[in-house]
Length: 455
Ligand code: HEM
Image (tube, rainbow, N blue to C red; front, side, top):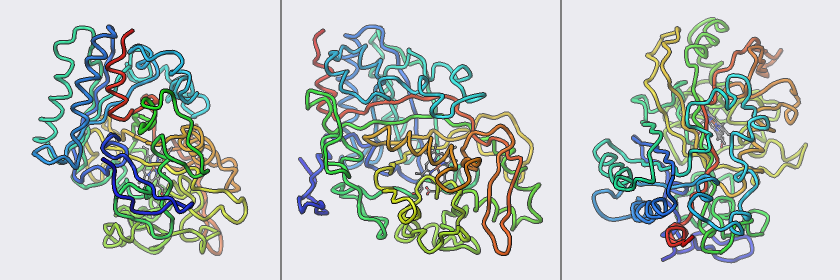
């Protein structure tokens, strides 16, 4: 079955996405609140691995639109390149995957800025290691529904001696509904043409489905490269999976030391993120938080930066504006931001640092960053390397992203202001990469194709 086309394509063609074959993880917004679980598995015996894939295909087929008790809990299954190799996907098919995926995330560490304490030699085991073959994520609105579906996913490998669960990470929406730094997340998302999901950003035409799902035209009008045979690639998507530890106490101290009072602390934090804690964008609410705006999906993503070229409302270097400059680069650089859009499906892990605490408690907390898209190179890697880890494109070459850009402890962040700008210096790193990998989440038919391989 396919969805009824909701929006005509540029060429006047109707786009119909085969949503019954596409795994729920990419196109479905996570519930709020949510609880979730990630499992990583190693496959030692390809036959057992393929049997696992067969069982997981049945679990992953239960999506948010499936009637029944598990209706809003869902499982996404994805594979590393090594995992596909291990499962017996033929070399000719493997050769058709994106080069970055084939290399794996650890091998891309230098390019991605995963250096120093974020470098793979310090990653949590087994993240980034050759042992990671299969990744499973389960998301649900509450623990009861998570438990039922997660147990099905876990039990799929129970009697298969040649498959082992080697890592587990639980995640959940913090009681505040925000991430560990105190900000609402997951708001700035592209509308996807033909997905049937409600449109959130009236200032941006929906992005072509081929930017996020293989087998459909992308923004260039072409089909994104995909592996053969057709059944393997179609309706699949690449995922970026990264465990990012957040240094919340260091972040709070940094603001405290530079602000005269709590209001200024909040302002400096908002300038770094580009949104207020509630999610209200600075571009719309430059002078103070507006919780009504932050909570309103019809308004909290409906803005551009065109009337704020100098960044007096939202600094050009703010995290959200770097990650998606919207129309800000159209004039000077003719950059087409539509080629660099990302679906993010991140979740929080670890206990919150209690309000007001400024000392580190050595707890592991942060974000499981998940990106979905068809172009690892011009989407995730481009945004990470050119926009977050570099400041050339906004005329401040020495500045990196204030929130997530790697730093040697001497980072700077410029806040445009009249009559004189403000510059925050000696910024330590607030985010450390604990590990991750590039994954491929195939369509359900592709999973059954893999399960049926006979090698
Ligand atoms: C611990 C790490 C990170 C934290 C705490 C974080 C936090 C946030 C927050 C609070 C927002 C604003 C709310 C929203 O629009 O959803 C945001 C937006 C965004 N972030 Fe991050 N982020 C992190 C890492 C990353 C990374 C590594 C990337 C990309 C490589 C990224 C890409 C984006 C994008 C694309 C947006 C939406 C911008 C928009 O459309 O306006 N983030 N992030």
